[in-house]
Image 1 (tube, helix red, strand yellow):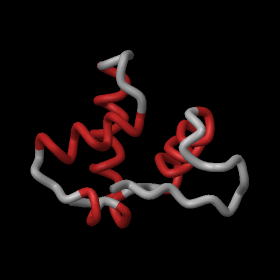
Image 2 (cartoon, helix red, strand yellow):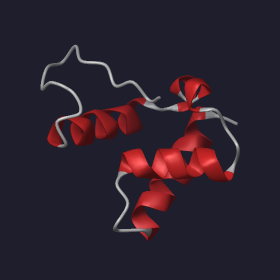
Image 3 (cartoon, helix red, strand yellow):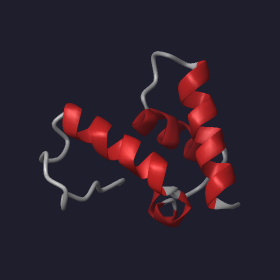
Image 4 (spheres, one colour):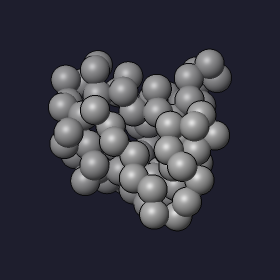
Length: 73
């Protein structure tokens, strides 16, 4: 599994399911493919990471700073 392929799959899930955001798409992909959420960090590309960060800030899951980290657990 490469970072590009993982990101493409997550983007496809988010696009095909308008009711799912990127955070939900990552979780869904991991559940379907039996991937541990702890191991996903290295598979997330920079553009996808920025989308996840923006979503997390909008949902108040993390502070609106450039140094905030999202815990996917």
